[in-house]
Image (cartoon, rainbow, N blue to C red; front, side, top):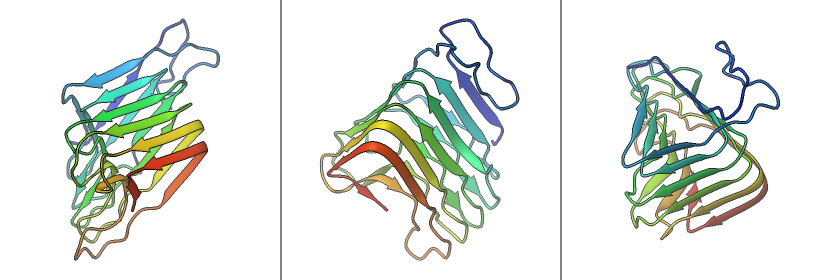
Length: 193
């Protein structure tokens, strides 16, 4: 539980800093694929941080998790920085990126930066692709998304949440903030809470 997971895919010579996990300028980053129910998890009593650096990231029915319980999680729970696109495909109706807070713990922030972001679900169920909500007295995680190109989110029905950073029923905590900066935003049959 907790700790860190750091993943970098590099396709040219250069260095990735061990301290801040940033790559050398002009370095070509490689592609990363997560699929077939793969799970990257730093969840625990005090959740840690998942950092991903790469060119393109393709996530198909996989989960990145940093859920916290009864203790504050790391300030930054999930940090994805890409030089190309992020593509997420879901057929399960399950959260893909999930730093939720439970009981008295505060969830960490989700930061995503990619050229373009495309999230598609074929599941006709109620779920959130990015789920940072709180289930107790703690604070839900903030979500910051930057895509200078296009952010496209498509669900099957209005049951799907693109982002849920709110509070569960009867929870005493407060939801997180959501900030989206994109050249173009297209939400189809999807919601933000």
